[in-house]
Amino acid sequence: MSTKELAYSLIDRLDEKQLDALIVILSGMSGVKPVEEIEPDEEELRMIAESEADDSEAEPIEDFAKRFQSAG
Picture 1 (spheres, one colour):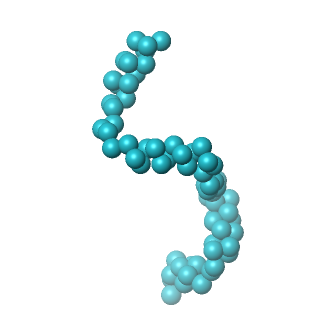
Picture 2 (cartoon, rainbow, N blue to C red):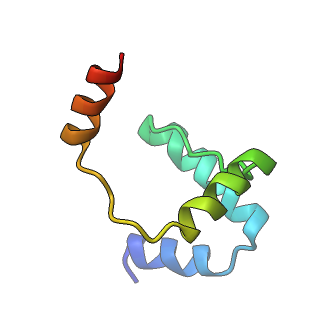
């Protein structure tokens, strides 16, 4: 069994809490900070719901920028 196969075999046996700890350890070894998931607050949930309900086409960023500049 290769080192990588052994690592995968051990990882498969870990629970979520152990996996979180492993990610922190591996991130420290690679110099990459782990991404911390943050639950959306009520305002963010409201904006997400509005966005999902809006079925209009997205406006190209260039058009938005022109409209924004002319409004200012």
